[in-house]
Length: 68
Image (cartoon, rainbow, N blue to C red; front, side):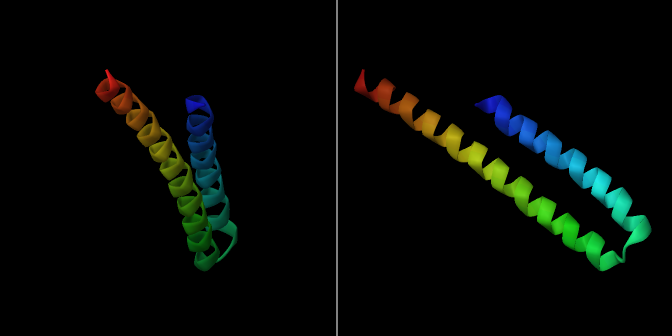
């Protein structure tokens, strides 16, 4: 579960680096900037998904502690 999100982040970072190098040489800067923001948005979504997963785990742990 945790490794899936980590792999998504790593793959997005590799894709962003490859796209950035490819787009900066061939396409205009607007394509480069648009690609950057799309990858940034996707990476933010994966990181938020991980945050909400950790928040639910912490919530369950705290409810177990308080139930004791």
